[in-house]
Image (tube, rainbow, N blue to C red; front, side):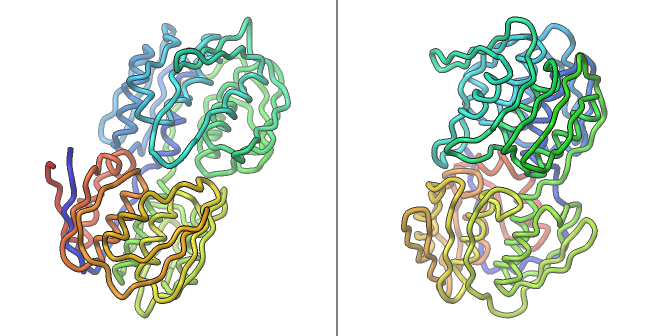
Amino acid sequence: MDKLIIRGRARLKGEVDISGSKNAVLPIMAAALLSEEESVIENVPNLWDVQTMVKLLRSLGAKAILESGVLKIKPGNHLKPFAPYKLVKTMRASVCVLGPLLARLGEAEVSLPGGCAIGPRPIDLHLKGLEALSAEIQIDHGYVHAKVTSRLRGTDIYLGGGYGSSVLATGNVMMAAVLAQGRTVVENAACEPEVVDLANFLKKMGAKIQGEGSPRIEIEGVKKLRGVSYRVIPDRIEAGTYMFASAITQGDVLIRKMEPGHLNAVIDKLQQAGVRIEKYKNAVRVKRIGKLRASDVTTLAYPAFPTDLQAQAMALMTITPGISIITEKIYPNRFMHVPELGRMGAKIFLEGPSAIVHGVRKLSGAPVMASDLRASAALVLAALVAEGETEVQRIYHLDRGYEDLEKKLTALGATIRREKE
């Protein structure tokens, strides 16, 4: 198991390129199963989660090869309907193969998923949507058993419940519906750019989809899809992380190969905090000159402030004068990074779904332990500005979602190295 050793007080400066979106490419990889033909996906980040999905596709009988950011997937016509626990347990997005397998084969047996420890994330909405499409579903011994007697049937689906809209559930239902008989209307669909990217991939394959990016998606089922070439969108969460890295270190960083329009809420909050943002077509320059200003953040579904950048925002607020309040509306228990930031001198108090952050003059380097992917990023950001040396343990979480993080930060001026624990 690896750890990062980070020496603080570095001012980041320079340019950094953003990799392809992890949260977009994983469902797209699953969607490639909907055709027998080969699909070629470009701008694919080399991450643990991507490698896990490659292994899962291979276990299902598909050919999958990733080289230099290009992924070739050829499902063929001998797919297996079984997704084992040993692969699915490590990554929640593995459940995305459920819809494509059901649509292609008429059956699927998929282990209940795992992932980060950020609170309960049930797959009720996935199952609700697939059952509405006429699938018969049972959960037995930790596996979802789904089958359909002939062909999935389109219908009207309200994809809602106690957990609001769901990106993965919207994708799973959309992937199943594209091969269903008739018309499907999904209400309360997730609007995130990753859903739009999946819809664009499916449409290039020959699917008939309208309304992606809105709460109402209409799908007209087709009998067959074809293999295609497609380029995945940039990772907006990685881009946002580097924006906060520049802000927290009083840096001056040009973040390239990204979509500024995907981060309007983040840009707005950084500007409120006193950070200068210059927007370009596919880049932003993040520069901090003066003092930071306290500001409040509430995480909500897109296009509001994303929950996946909540921890990074909190890291910035720990050294922001005054009191800032973060309210987590997506995953109310997503505050496992708070005790670790406290070890570095942060003053944070939890009250229900809110964290009250009292800015301190400085943070101090300390041994800390990562609990999940985005919490790991927050600890790295705090370490960049802390006095002395910080040891971030259990960084396998970072490898799940950030491509070459230490190399990119080193190129910007950080003093950071990877070691074996």
